[in-house]
Image (tube, rainbow, N blue to C red):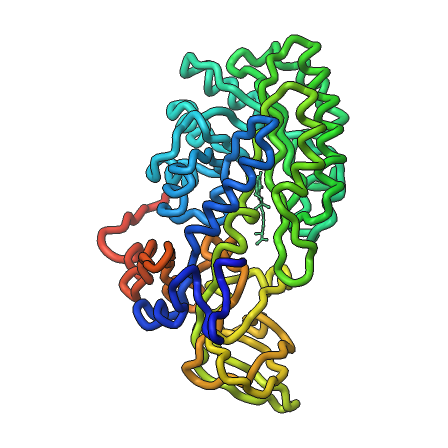
Length: 424
Ligand code: LLP
């Protein structure tokens, strides 16, 4: 996170003081660095250049329109998993020909809309879905390009909720059945096989699992080619891990060194769907201390104005996010404290037993590495308006999502809403 640094004890994002942002737009606020976002994307492009990568930024990691726009301007494609994400991508000016659509439960409407839009391809997760896409395409007198998402049964060595490439998960087509499914393509005239896809999990810093899974995928690609299918893409999904605490800090080159040689010999282009790698360390969540207190057992709490509804990762995955005061210019004694939010749940915490300098009411804290799956997994729980989002570029910063208001909270519950009568 070199775009976030302490200068004379004050946290800055690029050339903007974090405290300035809090002064102007309040807290809690997600603060993104434009330079970090763009550099991470460019690093991937460069490192994987020998396999002509099509990078499809995974919108689910952070789906702000302005960030999608920025990625699109940099030439990125997009990985979407719902009609809503497809809408977001198109509204932000994404090129339909660079959009891939994954997910185990695509509905008829989502399939129709995506075909109408002219997306690059669907990542097909089951035989039932294959039949459905083909039928919808036939009705529209179209042929939809697809990739099969294969479940290679490889352990990605990550949190169990983020592991998607093992046999027992709901994702993809079992590798052992893959050839049979490829054989059945002659029964489905509405689709053309153009790729093989995998996505084995997220936050993977071990270099071996991707390589292991890709070797299995490459064997299948060769088979498909020998069966006459024009396979243009190997889609390796996302999953590249970042440093939150003490995980090895992997660069795009580290991943490429393992992956490029495997893909290169197939002659296919590499498609990838990175989310966290691009945006994870490109943002912080800025929050203010509301109170400090001590529990009956003597432990200290720092109560912030951000909560689990704004960043759910710590409680959902017991994920670690580094937390530090925005102003650490005066050396203060350190204490051990739980950093928590105001929500009525014991699970509402950002960090437990953290060693931090003594803080007081109105002090600002930065929660680091918050760009991926932060804002996109936020909610209005406890009727808390969602935070504001800000994009820093050099010495300027721009609000890219205004803070929600109380009126926003009830907007969809007012006005003329339908009432239905039901007769048994
Ligand atoms: N492609 C597919 C098909 C995916 O399911 C995902 C993420 C990605 C790409 C992007 O993966 P990434 O490069 O970001 O690892 N909420 C969790 C992460 C769940 C990831 C879901 N799928 C978290 O907060 O860590």
